[in-house]
Image (cartoon, rainbow, N blue to C red; front, side):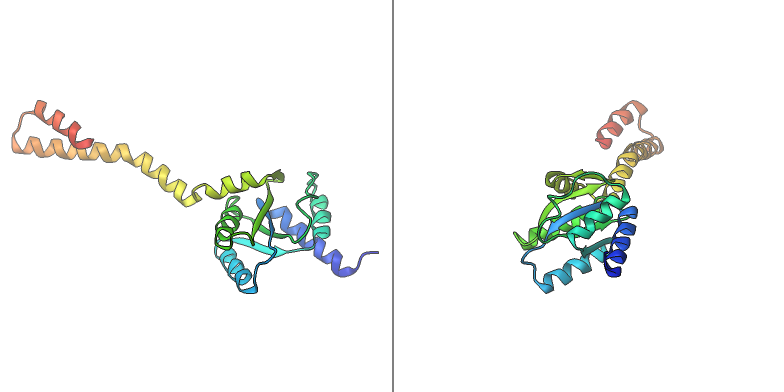
Length: 179
């Protein structure tokens, strides 16, 4: 019969997995205490939970949540987990960026996105995507760019009309100014 502490640990892991949008499996072999503390601090700041759990307990928690994908090869050796609850890309970015600083000490084993297993290359590709805020900024810029060009054109046209210049010349100049 399993110990009560292990049952409670599985229940906590199960609760985390139910709310997780994404999770990255990390081999943290060789990481120092100071590096681990810095990683945990950055994780908190980016809205990611970073923790270490026993592989066997994580396997049980994955099954209890209904995730049938086989993660056995990822759950071997030293394994830590970066879990994102709000942003599915944040755990990948955190581990990838921090791993670049530490070279071979922090290695991405693979991940889970919306309950499906993803490989290391997919986790790294997600890490290279712009953040949600950057993407929203790019969309806003793209939507506002035509409006800005129209505003510049109309402003130039209004200046020309006020100065009494012919309108044919204004249209060509406005097109040049908008470019």
